[in-house]
Amino acid sequence: MRPRNQTRARYPDETGMVERDGVHVAWERYGDGSPTILLMPTWSIIHSRHWKGQIAYLARHHRVVTFDGRGNGRSDRPTTTSAYDGSEFAADAVAVLDASQTDRAIVAGLSMGAGYALQTAVRYPDRVSGLVFVGPSVGLEDPMPNRRTVAFDEVPPAWEDWYLYGAPAWRRDWARFAEFFFRQMFNEPHSTKQIEDAVDWALDTDPETIITAEDAAYLPSVESAAAAERGRPSEPAALGYARRVRCPSLVIHGDADAITHISGGRRLAEALGARLVVLAGSGHNPLGREPVKVNLLIRDFIRRVERAS
Amino acid sequence: MDASRARLPDETGRVAGPDAVHIAYETFGTGDPTLVFLPSTPIIHSRQWKGQVPYLSRRYRVVTFDGRGNGRSDRPTDPEAYREACMVGDIERVMDATETSAAVLVGLCGDGVWRGIQLAAARPERVLGIVAFAPGVPKLSPPHPWRVQYSFEDELPTDEGWAKLNRHYFRRDYPGFAEFFFGEMTVEPHSTKQVEDAAGWTVDGSVDAMIADSEVDQTFDVPTIEATCRAVRCPMLLVHGSEDRCQPPSRARALAELTGAPLVMVEGAGHMIPGRHPVLANLLIRDFVRSLATSVA
Image (tube, rainbow over all chains, first blue to last red; front, side):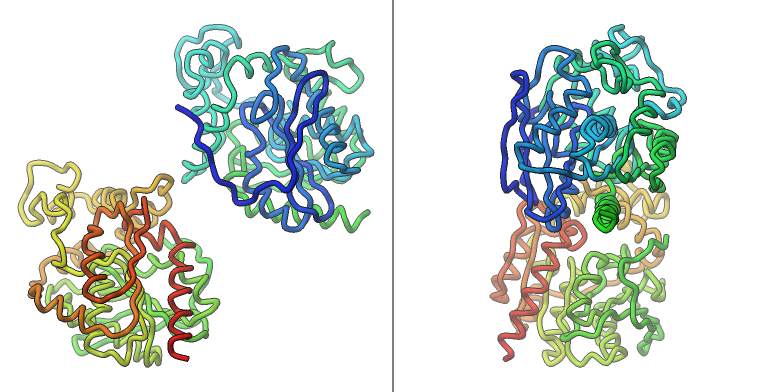
C-alpha cells in the first residue's frame, strides 16, 4: 500500500524549513489575517494534514501556521529517542514562529498535541496568547476499560485489537495497526474517509520511527530536566503545566472518545479554569469528523481572546 | 426515520387527481424561476433531493413532492395507479396546486427523467427546461445485463446479488434489498451515509406499493419513445455517471442524440449523482438555470 497524493482545498502561501540540532522541520503558512493560529503536531503517526478541515476555513480570517512533527510528513525522522521529547516539539514550535515572523500565536493541539501545546505555552509564555485543546491526551484521563495490553516490546498473545499496540505488531504490519487505531479514533458512523486519510498519513512514516519515539519524555514534570524522566506522563506533570498557564484556553472533547477518556479533558479544563465544550457522540478526533463545529468553536475562541487583549 | 433538515419547507400541502390518490408536496423559497424536483420510483421519496433543496432554494423557488407509494403521499396497491399518465399528471397537479405556471424540471433515473420528457413534449408551455440526472428513458439502449439476469416474478434458488431484485425477496427482506440496491447505486468510496439514507427512505415506503408499481403494464414502443424525446423543445442538460450500475451511459448518449442536449459524463460517478456529488449537481443546475435566463432575455 502506498500513500496517495491528495489535492488540497487551500495551498500554503509560504513554506519553509527550520533546523535545530540537525533536525529539519517543515512548516507552512496560510493567509495574512490576524491573529496567527499555530496548529501543532500530535503523535507523529500523522502529520500536519490532520488539520485539513481547519486550515481552509481559518485562513480566510486569520493567519494559519502548521508544521509536520518530527518523525512524519516533510520533517526529518531522527533516530534517537530524546529527539522526540515534548520539549523538542515545543522548541520546534518556537523556531517555526520565528521563521514565519510570528511574535505571538494562539496555539492549538489535538491529543498528544495538547501536551506539546501546554509545554510551548509554559516554556515560552510570551509567544502564546491562547490555547485550544482538542481531545487532550495529557495523562489526566481515566484508563479505558477492557483495553488489552502487553509490554510495548513483548510479543502479544494475539495480533488483534489493542494487542496491536506494540513494537512487534508495528514491525509485522504497520498498516494494520494504523487501520485499527484510526477506527478507534473515528468511531462515529460514516467515517471511512477520515480513516482512509489518517491511515495514509501513517504510511508517510514508518514503524521504526514511531518505535524510536515511543519512550520519549512526552510531558516531563515542569521542574525536572527532560532527560531525567522518560515515558508517559504522571498526573502531577500535566497539572503542573496547567497551573502555570497564564493565557485563556479552551478544551474540546468528544464524550464518545475511545482513545482518551473524556475525564482527561474535564480535568484539564478544571485545572486551567477553561471552558470545556463536550461534543455529544464524538470520538477522539472531532477536527476531522466535526470540522464545522470545531472551526466555529475556534473562531469564537479567537474572537474572545482578541476582545480581551 | 425523521432526520433533522438543513432547510424546512415554507409551505406543504396535498393534492389529489381524479383517482383520489393524494400527493404530498413542499415548497421552499420565493425566487424565480421555480424548480420542480421529480420523484423516482416508490423505492425512495422526496428527501432524495436533500442535497439540492437548501442551496437552490436560496436563489430559486423549489418544489418537491413524494411520488405515489412513498413519503407522505398515498400508497395505492392497485397497479393501475402507477400508470405513466397518472405519474405525469401528478407533476401538473403539483404545479397547479403550487401556482407554478412553468418550471424547470429536475429528475433522476427512468422515472424522474422520462416523465419530465413526456410532460415537456405534451405541455411545452409548462416546462422551461429539464435537468436529467442518470437519464433512463426506457428502451433507448439495452439494460445492464445484471438488471435482467434474474426473474423479478419467479421464486429464485438464490438471494445473492441482483437476485434480490425479486418480488419474493422483497417480501422476505425489503431492507436487505434496499441496502444491496443502494450499495450498487453508490459505487463511490465513502458513501455509507448516502446508502444508509436511501435505504432508510425505502423502508419509509411500502413494499406493496413497490410491487404494484412493478406490475403495471407500460406499453411504450421504441418509435413512440424516440418521437416523444425528439418532440422536446425546451433546453435540456443530461448528467450521467460513467460507473452508473442502474442506467447504462449508452442511454444518456442515445437521449443526447435524440434531443441535441449536452451530456456531462461524470467520470467515476455512480447512479446517485445528486446525493453523492451535491456540489457538482447544484452548480450544474444553477448554471443551467442561469443559461435559461440569458436565452429568454
